[in-house]
Structure formats: C-alpha cells, structure tokens
Length: 102
Image (spheres, one colour):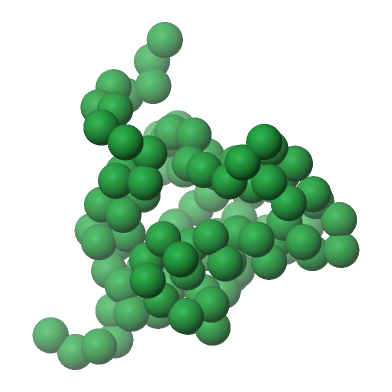
C-alpha cells in the first residue's frame, strides 16, 4: 500500500459547544461539536486541528473541501483511510455502541 491514502468525511458542525467532541452520526454525516465560536474562521480552524490531533496527522494534512461558511462541511484528510478515520472517531467518544436512535 502506498502512502497516498486519503479519507473524506462529511461533518455537521455545532460551534460554540462546551467542548470539542463527536456527538454521534446521522446517516453518513458525523456530528461534531466544536468549542470555538463560528466567527472569523475560528471554528473551521478548530475542526482542522481537532481532526489532525485525532488522526495523528499534521494540521496541513487536513483541509475543508466544501462548506467553509456552512455547518455542513466536507473534510479531506491525507495519509489516513476511511476505515482508520472511522475507528479513530469511534474510539474518541468511548465504548458507546448504540446507533443514536432514542
């Protein structure tokens, strides 16, 4: 396998949360709460830093592909495949296994 792995993920961002964390999944969209406020690109920056830390990649490996000014964003991460990304997300929010249907 080459080092050209690249994962794309669709996120629904809620900026201004108490803390940055994933809050489950709705269909193919991951819900991500970000502590940064949605002003001057701060939330976008926080999303990229959070995903870089989560995947162990440099911030330069994470880029927002679409949705800069929208809560719905498509993000691409270099050097990680989708399976590894999903696993990192699941591990980030504990051993919960329910599907989010309340």
